[in-house]
Length: 354
Image (cartoon, rainbow, N blue to C red):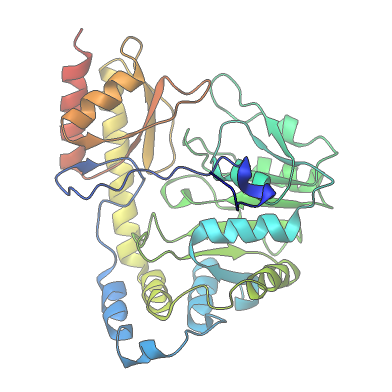
């Protein structure tokens, strides 16, 4: 085994994606997908793009999509870099802005792809332990000596958000390093750092259309930054693959971004369901973090999380469990429809009546 593998990847521990079952009878609350369909305008644009023009390569500059993103954030198209999902954009950022001779600083409990990227690109991670309540000790991120900072806001899997004033403190403390703010879940709570892009030449904000815009199946993400940082991302992209966002995805994503009313209606519904479910779970004795994302992070005081995971699966409900220090007693539960969350709470009530 691994006879022809490169030395670089032989000892790598890759990211493990959430289960995507073929059986659609499951209530799927394990990968933080939107429970509601995409904007009808996005679907209409998708169908229109799926014609004879598919024989042609897509626009490598994503001109229409960049304009739609820029308009949504009050920025210019020169401050926008689209990619094939935010994971690709994050990977490009790790290549473009961080060097092996200085560590990359991020939380010890956060999106696990950061550690995977660091390993893959030969970088050294410098982990900042979260507090016991999973809040981020911002002061620990301010110390000099690192080659960059990566921050998920809201954080995953805890769902906790960092104040915009604290992000500004981090940017000020690292004027000569890039601060990468991953806002995959910002549509559901917290304050976006996009307003700081014109002010800070060391800030990169990464967003996705997978969550709030319900386009996970199309893989569209983007970065917001000043033009010099965007140029670095373009350099990485064009050294690997100039056509990262396909023609249909560009059209659907642009249409979705322009349909602000639909987006706001659906994200507000997810937030209402999150709040209602969090209250119900607390009433059942669960510890529930103050999640600002489209998921809940919960722990029962008596029943182990793995037992609940298995029991829910037996009842046709998928959630996520991480077998990692400090969080193996917790489940991460995607916020679904009201009906799906009612089924979840009923199942958990049955499993925890001991």
